[in-house]
Length: 170
Image (tube, rainbow, N blue to C red; front, side, top):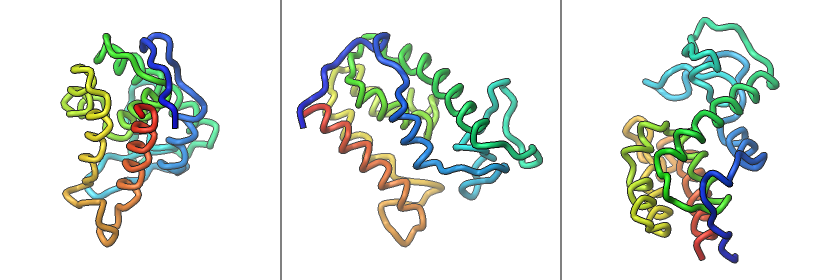
């Protein structure tokens, strides 16, 4: 695969492909659920905080798929601004941008800011940033690269991100 052209972050935007990927991996729940033991309640496509800033509670009313997509879009747009501000001098391809925004949606901007992925991007080491994606394969102390730990989807999502990222850097 030919590497995508890298551009300043201000020229990149949220794509339908990014939203579709998140929707596929996160799935949809009309009512609040706790996706993994010890986690916070989510609704829709993994929404933990509504656009008005209120946290999802287990007692909240059900939502439609349309509402779920609107909440997702709002959240990703807010994340995109903070993400771009966290690595202001980086240039990314659209594929990398999508991969890293998908990652921040799953793990959060707090984890992003402490991650080796971000540290490598700041240094301009794009390939090592891709490789760092593979470090994030644990949920609630379980290694999700081991199928019997019942979280293998977390690992396959990381593998998918890694392949897209490396493809953009080959």
